[in-house]
Length: 508
Image (cartoon, rainbow, N blue to C red; front, side, top):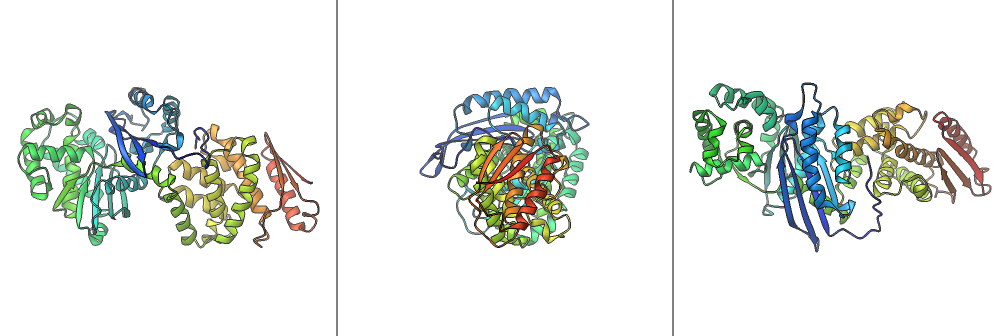
C-alpha cells in the first residue's frame, strides 16, 4: 500500500474532508467540513467517465479510458490541493477490481492526485454505501434494505440504524448490462426480458436468505434509481416513489418507446440514456426476486460513506479495529500473546521508523494488526500455519479494509516465521517491497523475543536500522539467561541472510 505523506497519530484532526469514488460508470467527489463532529457538505462534483466501458476483451483498461479517467481526476486534484492525507479517501470499485492492468492505472492516478488510491472489495463497497445511506435517513427502528446499482456491480445490504447485517455485491451493473443487452440503443421486449432474467439468475444467490431475514423499508441510492424515480414522476405513474406496479408499467412504456433517445422527452440526461434500460432491468429483477413492494430514494451513497468512515477513524471508532477483534475471537487467537508481540514490535518500530521510512500511521497500523493476528492460521493447522493465516487475511471479507491493505497484512503474516524468501512478496508492487520487508523483520524479531510465551515485558533493547541491516543490542547478561532466544536469533540471522539482509546481535 503506497503511503501518503506522514500522518502521525499526534497530528490534529483535519477539519476538511474529501472522498472520491471512482465508479465503473461515474467518478464522484465530495468535499466536506467537519464541524463539532458533524459532516457539512461544501461541494460535490461528478463526471460520467464510464471506466467499465473501457475494458477490452482481455479485461484491460484501454488507453482511451485511462485518459478519460485521468483528465477527470486532474480536475478533482485541483480541489484537493493542500488537504491533509488523513482527511482524504479515494477508492476504485468494480471496473478496477476486474481490470488486469489496474496497478498501472492506479500509479498514474496517484501521480495526478497526489494521494493514495485504494481498490475496495464488493462487500466493503456495500458496507460503505450503507454507511452513507443510513446517515442521510431518519434514525428509524426496524431493518432496511438498501440497493445501489453501479456500472459494474450492484450492492444489496440489510441493516438496522447504522449497522449493516447482510452485505452482498453481485456482478451486474448498468454499464455491463448495457453493453450486453442494449448496445445499439434499441429497447426490445426480447432484450429487456433477457436482461431481467439474467439479473434474476444473479439474485438467486441471495434471494432466499434475504427474504428470510426481511426488512421494514427499502431504499435505493444510485444514479440509476434516482433517474427511474424521476421518469415515474414525469410520466405521472407515481409521485416518484418506486412501487412494484409502477415498475411493471414502466417496463411496458420503455418497450413501446423502442429507443433510448426518446428518454430525453422524460427528462433523462443524454449521458444516462444509454444505461437507463439496463439499470431498470436490474432494479425490476430485484423487485420481483426479493418481493419488494415499495422503495424510496436516498441521496447518500459510497462517497458519503467514505466521509463517515474517515470521521470514525478520526474519532477512534475505526471499524477496522472491530474487524481485527472479531477475527481474534472467531479464530480463537491467543490475544494476550498477540498483545505481547505487539508491544515488542512497536518498541522496535519506534526506534527505526525514521531510519527505514516507516513513519506513517498506515505502517504502524499494519504492524500492530499483523502482531495480533500472526497466529490466526493455527485454527486450520499448526503445520505451515503462517501460510494458512496469510490466505485467510488475503481472501476474507474484512470490513474497513481495502484489498491492498489486506494484501499487506497477509504478507506480514506470511513472512513472520521460517524461511524469508522472495515468495513471501509475490504479487507485491516493487515500490512496496522494501517497506513490507522491513516491517516483516520487525514482526519476526518480536515473535522470537516473545517465543517463550511468558508474557514478559520486552527488554530495553537498542536498535540501529541501516539499509538491509539491523543491529540489535540487548542489556548485558539478558541473552545469557535466555539460551533459547539466543538460538532463535542466530537461526534468524541465517534466514535473513538468504534475502541479503544482515542481522547483528550484540550487548550494551
